[in-house]
Length: 255
Image 1 (cartoon, rainbow, N blue to C red):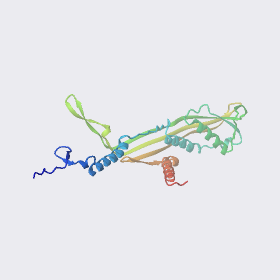
Image 2: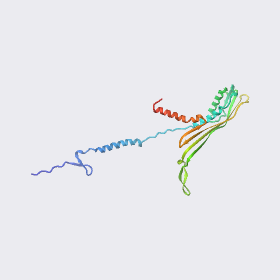
Image 3: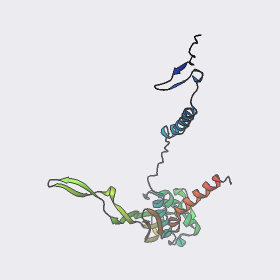
Image 4: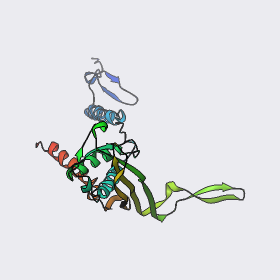
């Protein structure tokens, strides 16, 4: 009696040198799915890092720094408070400001009127009704600035006719300490005359005053400020203190 040989179950070739049962076709290995998911999450985290934005805000500054204005007006105020207007007390005085050419002429005119009023002078806004005309002249009204540094100069490699050579390079310099000095000077004179006759009735004589400040920087940190004017020394630390105070109030939700 003849018997047929047993039939082998069919297998399908997957890849090269690898075969799987027919029923396993279409299933993905677990490791492959995990790798795809990990790659997807990695791309999600990488895209914000690669596609990033940048926002810039343009900040402009005034033609004159706040420090310079405080220093100059403070120097003028300190000089003006020494002037004695008592001989003009009770008289109607008009301030002729046409000769005030200093940059802070509005402050100068207002402070003059205030100081005279505090000492009993009657301020007259109409020149035709004034008994006395007051004029002011300036011999000096400005600032000087001097800077000094202590450090190591920067060196770089340059070329010359003889070949390569060391040249100075400020971009690579190392500054240990830096001091910025600013001095303000005021020289002025006041005189008054009768409106009708033009006769000289009072003069202050020439008065002079100078004030200054120093900003010290140590390894880039600063400024550590000293000044003969209290308001100049207080600024800009006061502005930064107020800014930090407001920042923390916003941060912690406090009014």
